[in-house]
Image 1 (cartoon, rainbow, N blue to C red):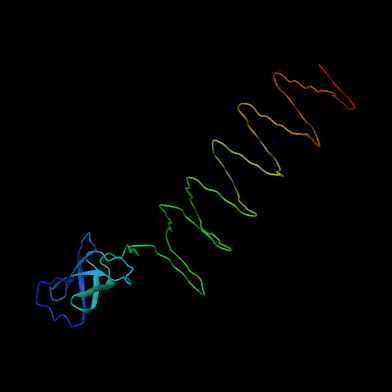
Image 2: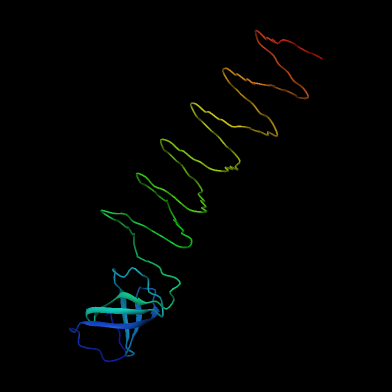
Length: 220
C-alpha cells in the first residue's frame, strides 16, 4: 500500500489533491506528509518534482486515488537558502533550438566524481577568479592563443616537444642550479652589442676547426 493514514480516508476511487507539510524521509524513498487536517500520508516523490523536498517544506500531493498519491511539487521551502535538484539517475539538460544558461550572482562550482567532459564548437569562460584542480589532464587541439599579464608555472618536470619553437622577449633571465645542457645540430648565438662568458673553468674545443676573428683580440 502506498498511503497510510491516521484518519478515515475517502474511498479508493476518489482523486486526491491536498497541501501538506513534509515531516519525514525514509531510506526506501517513502515520504511522510502531514495534511492540513492532521492526516498523515505516506507517498513517493513524482518524477516531475526535480526539487528535492526537505522536512518542513510545504508540498502538494496529488493522485488518482488514495492508493496512488505522489508528491508532485514543493510549494514553499522551509529553508530558502539552499535548493537542490535531485534525481535518482542521470540528468540531461537540452535545448533543441536555443541556449542553456547557468547563472549565479555568487560562486559557481562544477564537481564530478568521474570524468568532466566539456564539448562544443565554441565555448567561453569569463570570471574574475577561477581555480582548476585536475589530477590528470590531457588537451588536444589545433591552436591555442593566450594573453595574460603574468604567467607562472611551478612543477617538478616540465617538458616541451615541438617541431619549431620561437620565443621573443624584451629581457630574459634563466637560473639553473645544476647542469644546463644543449644538444643541437647547429648552434648559432648572436649578440648585437656585447657577449660575455665567465666560469671558474671554461673549456672550448673543436674537432676540426676553431676560428676566433675580431678587430682586437686580448688574451690573458
